[in-house]
Image (cartoon, rainbow, N blue to C red; front, side, top):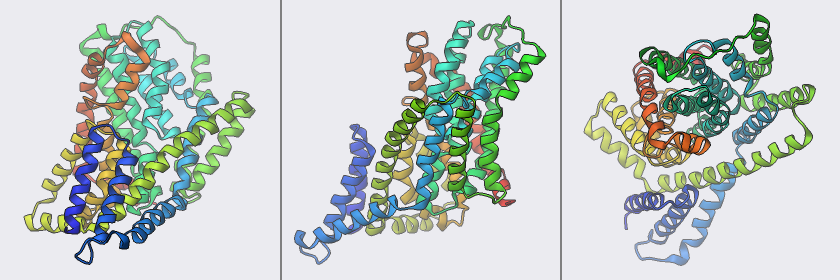
Length: 445
């Protein structure tokens, strides 16, 4: 059997396994290993399985070994640890508390503060799911107690949680950078303006929503003095410091992304102990949670690396590039097709799964058209961000649903999400049509 046909069959097998809820790591590793075995066994014409054992095991284990020993991969446990430590030390929620004090008297102010808080949380943790889960427990019950419409109270946090995909540090950017061999530091910087543009768009959605229908966000009868507002703003300094350390250090050439992660972890631990908001027990729990989360990501990444090597062995990617080149598609048509594929997959799969499944085929296409991989990375991450709140399987929506329970049925959350999705699509179009939005900051390094 032709190697490219084996590749297509293996790709189809992966999709079938994902459809029946086989974990992405096992689906990728099993399909690529079996496919590699068949390719090596059939190379001489006659099927000779005894000749395929050694090269198959060599390809599988060497690729997994090389990935685990990738220096850039050390960023993932560092940034995951930073998120857990900062949360246990109360650093990640300080932005929300400050924004709430300043905005609470505005109609819809707490929802706006929730979005701003999600942005601040994302600037430290880099995880959309963690952001939605944590901020959902803090912000959503408070808005419901204040009489907010459950659509606004839940959708604002579910949408705000997606900011963790774009605003650095982002785990998705790290994985994209490793698999495409692009600069993670430049990817981080490229996500800043699109992330802030998305955040501003979400705040605008809340403002327009409450202006058209004031009943969805009652005015809070709470008054804070100027001193209380000032104190709340000052209390957020650890979160601001960590963000400046990460982004400013990378932009100024002081740190690499990995070094910025390590320095930020050390600073977060020092701040937590100095402010007496972090205990040794909390630090130990943070480390255990970091190990569990990192292990899951590494297993997926190792399986994806094996899958990438298998796709290269089959020659499917060059044939796909040749077919697209022969079709003479315009860049606009190509990007529209790619966006449609990611949006459809985002309705059913998790972001990391989509990325590791599609990048082996997408990157050769993009390179063949001479498109910038940093810009394309921002487009991909934005599409994955949209998938987090797209029905029927918007992961952030289900996270918020689990948090609030019967106070907000799933269909009510999705009803509120529609307004935020419209902004997401507008920002996506702006990023695709004007690459300078993504490339301005990394280009000025």
